[in-house]
Length: 306
Length: 256
Image (cartoon, rainbow over the protein chains, first blue to last red):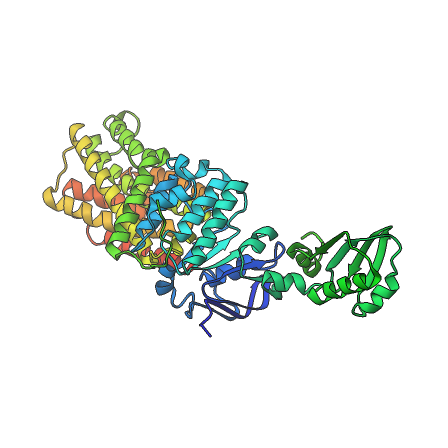
């Protein structure tokens, strides 16, 4: 197997009496988009900043592209693009000037004008950083992360504060980065963003990894999938339940409207169709309601506000 | 326009990075009105006021412009290498600029060299402008070429001492506190630190003031342009301040 792009092993990070990261283990496969999800305070930013070499692991280890982010910082920095959650520019620096400056520190930067056009940054090139809107600052920050043509980029909440147009432009760019072979690690609070973009998702809470997998794996691993179907009223639900796997429940929630709750897979649908055929029943609509990533996230991390 | 995102990482050549960093720092400085006020306008005002300073304060024997000019040169050096550097660095920490650049290929040594480069260029411009204006106002520098040699030497040592102090403050305090302390120290040393007013006017305090970087730099330059050798003392004083503050700054500096 390929060497992981990022490897976090038993990482522990504390601030005073608060343990931000508590024995975290995760890996990022090269060439993928990997999202790290978690409620506020889950330890996402601390983990990412340790991978970026801003903090030394207090316990455990972090390897990035097979190297130590602090000891090998000099050889890693050109290869790794970093988007900070906020700031990162002089208050008086103009947007394009800042981007060109970061580009000038790299040997083979992207075409700055093309990048500006792609991210829709043409209109505020001469605006000082302090007068840019939050979304404009975000786009500049993203541009600074990728302008050096890195192999690996860390994006900390890349679309926070963006309007829908800018969000989609950012998504397109991240997808294109992956197609070009760049590994992307991103944190986000938007579940649709994680669903749309990521090949792999790590859910982190209280500083530990609580779930990991593809979007499909995470959504299917939950028990709350349902099938709704409509047919004539008064079907024999007991008989249907006997036909289905034994932990499956069937209810007629209103006359002619039925809900099957349980592990929904193709076999279950086939059984339902066969049972209906045997009863001479025509189902008028069948709707599979898969649990969304957001449902799964809330199930795993709880609904309490942080 | 097409965007070729295929990875092709690499750091720019060190000289190119440094050039870019120095030019960035200089542009930001020139755009910042308060910094310009500090580095040029205030020293120029003091120089002009200095021609008539005998009507306000007694600076001692001699022509006021000859006494004031070396002090104003010392003030210009302190403004740039201490106050200006401390405030700029404090806000760079606050705004995450140091963090952002810390993630770029620019090494920390490059960041430091960039700052030193910008400071040296600004000071050179300040000293040329101030010397020319002083000359126009009737300044007679004594001590010949040697005096200007002392100016170069003490400017370098003074910058090292004040620059280290600036980084010590900016690397440990919050940006607002740095702003306050840098301005307060500037005013205190300007008035009471032997920077502009000759040490002989301070009575018994002069022996202590000689050991301050401001006293060493100010008096050293006054001696040099009076045609007498400043001796070893100001050199030693500035070196000791630079060494102590430099080591402390290197140990305590927080990048964010």
